[in-house]
Length: 104
Length: 465
Image (cartoon, rainbow over all chains, first blue to last red; front, side, top):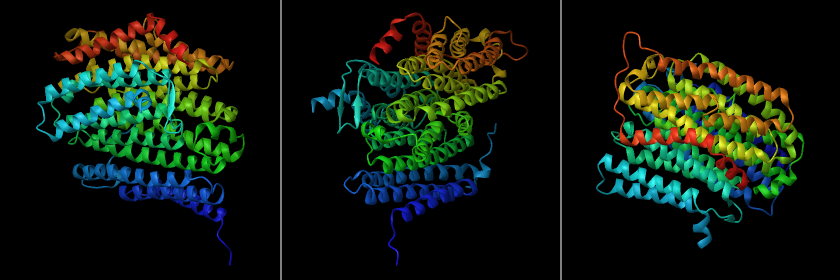
């Protein structure tokens, strides 16, 4: 049985991050786009914790950063959801394709 | 304790204003006109507090650094907010949620203050978020306009993506160096693939916030859809604060990678100037036009940032000061015309001089300064930027930048020509210039003229570096 190490965690982090980016650009539903961004932020959290545990165990920077990232992600989601609700009132949809009045 | 009060005076002042507004809102409330005058007074005090008595020091374990230059930069940002509160009185005085608008704007300003002072990646990340999340909420402030919610959606989504990308870069930097402190990180960064990748991730977030090509797509839409006050804030204060922070990142965090980032900044700068200029040529919506013109101006800021010498930050600071006056003159006129007459297009400006000469002159002066025509301060701003960039010795790059200035002359002067030519058919209706708006336009015009003539200002900035 192999013990999971730094590289496994970093690979998971990178995969999650790029899944998030892929999702952000392919999803058309705003809530799904928001979820993709959460994926990206959580991949960063995995990175921070992995680096903190395996490379720099005597510091606390990574752990603290993670706590702040979670808090900020919540704040960002709150504002984004408020904006999406307001957009739904005026456009009757939360598909990004409907918000295309302004171009070029 | 005293040290905290002294070094964080401008931040504490902003927090105080936010709390005053909050208590007014929670209590009985004041009539909108009185409240607006009160806020303008408080913001004026804030400008004075930021410019005066700046000491050097570090607090919070070196997370927060303050010095004379940072104080001056914060002063410029507060000045921008004060001018916006004056120039957009037309729109603000009737807005039902005015106190909230100022609370959000001041929270973003607070984030920018911390951004300018940050010397630690955690502080830096938090302040960048504080400077951008409230702006997205502000972009939605015309609740009934469809375009406003569209703009806010584009803003919040793209800024969240940018901050996610930046965080990934920060996590790589933490993995490389084991620290988040600028002073300890820079020594462990070398010219290696992983380090360059971390830099590129971090830089792309800046490119988003500064709307550097190829990250500029949100800019024009957000500028067009948001209320003019928010657009002005985004284009002046946000751009200014982020360019100050970009200087810190490039020169304090990545000095060891200066060879790769020099190439990157030069290429992006040329692209930004070209695309900003050529898209500005074909715009008819005034705010969209200003969006592309501000993209082009960011290209010039990047010219200076590539310079790698001691002149860079003084040139950038001086340019931002001039840019505040000149851009806000244009935005002030746009705000008055949009809220009183509903004018949004450049072609509708024809013959503005006939009915409201004061507005026409302020607009012309602002556009002259943006184009960089000698008596206006914009010329000196551009000159110092190009000089800072030229010190590196890459003259073909500076030549391209200078040629771009000539292209930009065409579209700025086209508007001036329209404004001063005789109207055919339908005339622009007369507008009523409120006292605060007049004061704001006078300050902007005086700033445009004086900042160019009074050489003491640039010397003063240079002495603080």
